[in-house]
Length: 296
Image (cartoon, rainbow, N blue to C red; front, top):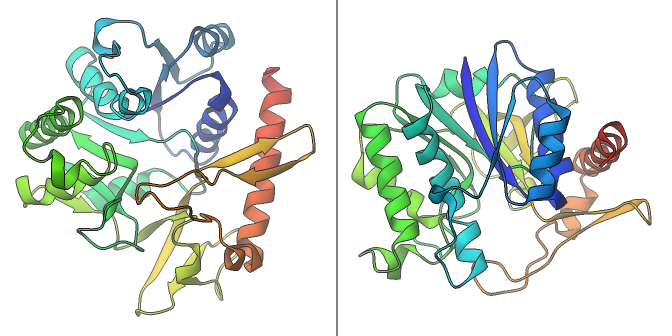
């Protein structure tokens, strides 16, 4: 049994259910997805749907109380809080946190095949180096084993995120919970797997880094433009993807990022990549179908 967790409010629920169905579709084994609901409406809907493999949790117990003045600080503390809560209160041997706007295109076991016996797993951005403001690693996928190093790393991350006076705040608190991931390798050098040898997370910030010569819907392999490396794009992070069902279209939220600059996260060049445009179109359709299927 594999244990996953994600979180969202009702506005993101269709995306969370697209994630869920992608896990179901490509699953070779059993899993449970703990879903932290940030409002009553999402919790009520998930509870009434009573879906196989989903366990809704309402963010009202003491572990998830908002003690932050800034709502963003609170929301970005929940990934670590949720993982820590599950480790402490559920009978699980590991937890894989997944952002709700991620879609799997292959069996999730491929992640575990790469992590092997490591206690911690993180995914690189690929476009960032260590030291940059938004961090070298993305918080969309984070893994912790329930052993000593896994638990200590999770507790360390949670302490950093929830304590504004932590000693790493000035250098590593520049992108909410994310840049602290760079410290995992420093604190636990022998226990971290950087998931970069066989798999890549596709996302707005790295689509332009790849060639798609071998890429098909049945074999989503990409090669880097600048280095001799071929990886399987096993899951895609559709960050800031805004659904516009009224106009039967989608767009991309271009709020300021962690660098406090406006960036077109899906660039014009990304749109020119036929394979990416097709996947974005498909993601819109998946969300639309989910809304119709579950009457969201």
